[in-house]
Amino acid sequence: MSARYYEAVGRRKTSSARVRLYPGTGTILVNERPMAEYFPRETDVLAVVRPLQVTDTVSSYNVSIHVIGGGLTGQAGATAHGIARALCEADEALRPVLKRNGLLTRDARAKERKKYGLKRARKAPQYTKR
Image (tube, rainbow, N blue to C red; front, side):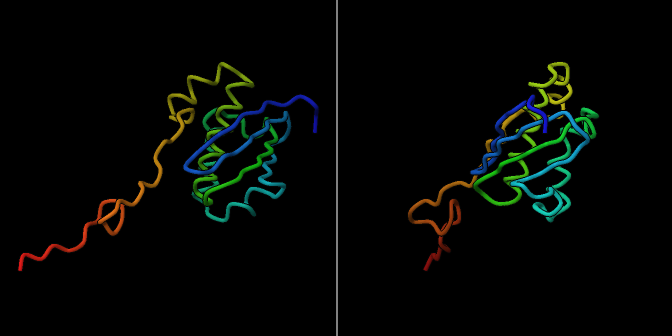
């Protein structure tokens, strides 16, 4: 791969993805494995490729991703966020398109913690009157 690349970090839930964009033909590697092998679900693959499809740069960059933490869906979201940020670094003209599609905003939704006296975050034990 060439020496010049664009790097960014994407995050989602407890996942963190370090993304590098190299000028190239469109190869996507996740943790040194092909993307289709790493993400078996089609929805996760679509989420990862979405920033590249929206900006019509699918075959312009080779993408190298190092992702850790969380589950596969969270990792896919973190990867998409990182790719969008790296594309902004590569070409500032792509920023409005990515922003319009909501790809630059970090998705802050995460699991709510369990509270004492409850069965889950909000589910209370069954109430009995008598």
